[in-house]
Image 1 (tube, helix red, strand yellow):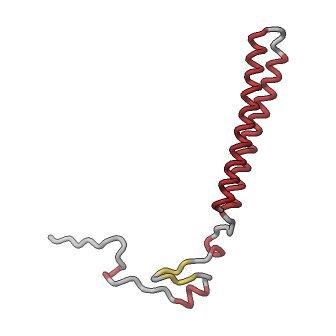
Image 2 (cartoon, rainbow, N blue to C red):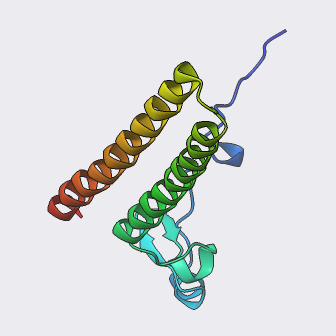
Length: 123
């Protein structure tokens, strides 16, 4: 018993791939590249957004998220300091918490500036 295996990329019947109809490809807004009809972005459902816009949106979201977390941390540190009620250890913990929250805001801000500067060179 002999078994014939056809590669998955081969055309049915062992024939070579058929070139797309240029009129049909053009009607759908595509461009023929070799044996493929490449659709335009209007027919793929993808947005025509530039990479730099996407990077700016992602960076803005990250800064907003970490900024919100840092503001919540600052509020919690302030409440902890208020409720320390003369307990020096808890007051020091609250001060340290406040210091690290501010350092976090500075790091996120500097990271945003550095990434935007680098992105301006490449995008």
